[in-house]
Image 1 (tube, rainbow over the protein chains, first blue to last red):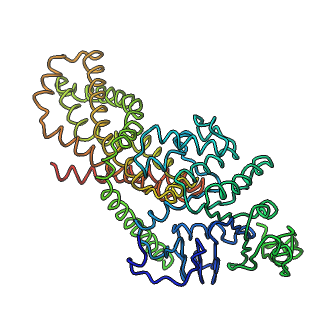
Image 2: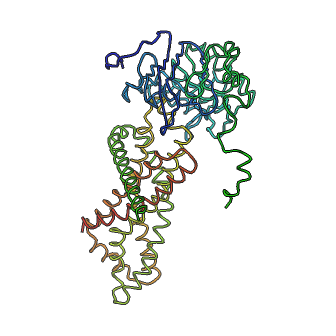
Image 3: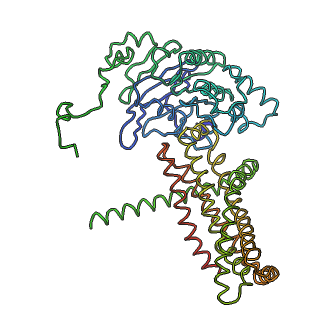
Length: 282
Length: 256
């Protein structure tokens, strides 16, 4: 859908950016998640979105895919204002997007082959032989061609993540979103996924957005990084620039310090008083 | 007293909100049903899941319901010396009431809970979100075929239940208790009319629509947690049972 034809006035967005968030406010149940969030994702880059747990990193991805709508501000993806699209326009836009979910989100009633073939079967009427070849090519790219006949419940966490990655790239998307791709992986699987993200980005000429809190790992492959805290961007730049950033929040996050501006303890009454207080005991 | 009224008012509001949500959901399901029928393979799969996989429980329960009906009916009719009418009484009660109602309750317990928990788990494990991101409408791809599968299965299961139950009545009445076989079948054939069969099938279809809709609605809108899926499954059984009995009264009143 042509956004201009649909009558949506788009704010100025850099043509070099594949996704732009401008002044985005978003809240859940009255509690603000983002306030005036500004992020630009450059075309062709691997961009890392980092931040402590609960800062809305996954919510950010859902705003980009149009599964959530911002309370205020604009989310522009591939030149289109996501909030201004109707459901059919959104579905057209989403065909350009692939997403790797944190748990893989494989369809549990389909085997590995059919999971990867799923978007092809839904969107393209291709001869079965071509579907087979495309699926095997994508599975080969993630090293799991031999697992085509397995069911999702027979896969390890790392394998499931790689099958989901094959599914995410099967339609040759322009943008690939990764939601915590390293969570719960052993070091070998983590290294494999890490290399895949970088190599797929270069081989397919796509733009990747990696949401994670694994600072060290993602710093090896990211061209640019954003750190979110308290609903806004507290720092951005290359991994080197972030390491030398003066902000205590950024330093705490980059160094993995337990306490700092981001408190380890959830707000609570005085520890000593609470232990001695007998009124709470029934 | 004030608190009680407040609680009642908020419960009523919650009920109305849920009713409104279900009505909107039903509208969306019905609107997408013709498109889903263009992919019959998905619907046939669900007819197998909701219908064929329920056959064992439907046939087993049908047999025992029929056998109990045979015992009770014989005992009652014997008091008036009209035990040959056992076939008529059993056939009419099965066709008009017991068949559709018991099948619907069993359907809610077997297929309804399976549908609700499957959809709830798909929600909890992001499978439905993944479909949305893959530009596949989960309503059209997942919900509607399951709904249609249930709607098609229910009248068929009702027919199977009634047939097996009648065999159970015959087994007890004719084979065990000695009712005359000729009288049993000929009286049944003479008294049962097409309207009685139609009433059973209309009820079976209506209960199928209601139970399937409740199951897919509860599953699709389940909270994405273990507790949420459990609650959706429980609600499916409870609401389906209540709605089936209420609808049964309404339909009976209309068709009498």
